[in-house]
Amino acid sequence: MKQSTSEPLENYNNTEGQQTTESSQHGITSDYNKTDSNGKKQGLWIEEIGEIRREQYYKDGIRSGIYRQFFWGNLSILGEYTNDKESGIWYYYDLGVLIMTFENFTVNHDTITNEGDKRRYIPDYKCYYKAYHSNGNIEEEGWLLWNEGENFESDFSIEYGTWKYYNEKGELTKTKEYKP
Image (tube, rainbow, N blue to C red; front, side, top):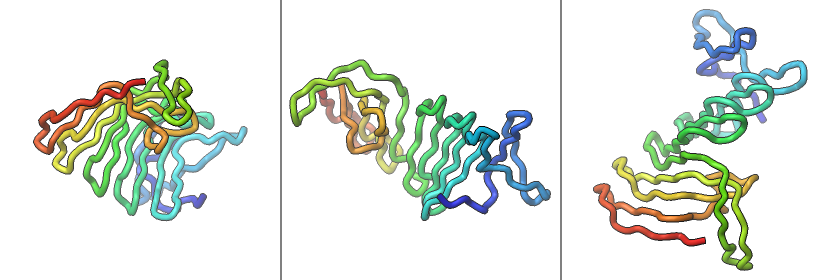
């Protein structure tokens, strides 16, 4: 991965454990992409791969705090990690327009049947998903299940329970039950 040379939005102060906003205009240098004496990531990490820029925080090598991803300079994902797991509400944007959110992340205990081999299994995680029309009204919403090693945006997630679908005016047009 390529280390960014541009100024981060926030810097991490390892001695006090607090984030502070600092500007390069005041002669303060950047302090990010640091490891401690044990080689564990600490504080703000900025990584750029092609046109994607990721800004995330680590504590003792574990993702912990705000996560931001930019595509072509535009915010595309905003979320938060707690102990290396997604938490809070994750927002996904396309050129500044909110297109979907994920929230209520939890360990899953619901059993489903694999359509291919008809075997029953329990996906590892679940979260609540909402997609939005371009005018900001909800388009669809419901629970998603997925396995460890994948994430909530992967092609391997599966709809579960009652899903609701809305027209562009925000009016409920149908519901569908996804059974195990």
